Image (tube, rainbow, N blue to C red):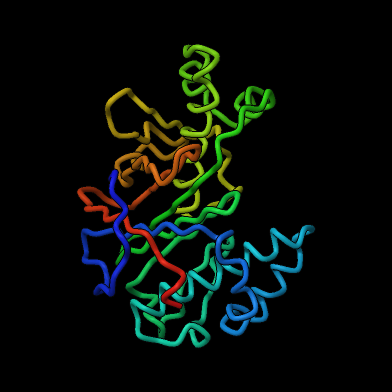
Length: 248
């Protein structure tokens, strides 16, 4: 997953495929007015909740780009796409738009965004800019499992921030895939990141069979960022591509 070639027109992902697309939001903030014409009133309202104008514009670019990506797969104009939301807020396409087959998830952080698209599988994606912050230790104490805290503390101090964000994005990708969001406490399940191996969901409190239902992957979209993908099922093929906003 080291290469991110420019995305081209492609058919819907197959049953065992996940398409991951990356994009730089800040280089296209000038497109906000154009993208506003494709988003729904609900999305506009969400954008207005951001305190800072730059964050509002980034949100609009991300949502408008998501519509452009899904539009290209479905051959439906971006403005016509209709989203529904699960009981805990996870978005999905309306049935008449292909929601029974096409699944997606979007994440963005500090001007960078990732979108995952697949078929008939739940999927979650997360990205975070790596920031050396003394509060990471306190966050880990409250939100990580005892095993994750031990793995973090076993590392030299200079490596701990990177590991913190690697673990954090894996956990966020998993809860986004399940649709549970903040309703599933992050310390109620454990992720392992063994050196040289794929991430593993070790277990979920109260659901002994849950770990076998999901696959976790580590992504490397840009230096200075940690990113993760969670996919329902096993044996999937991941294709990573660069999405050019110039095609919109």
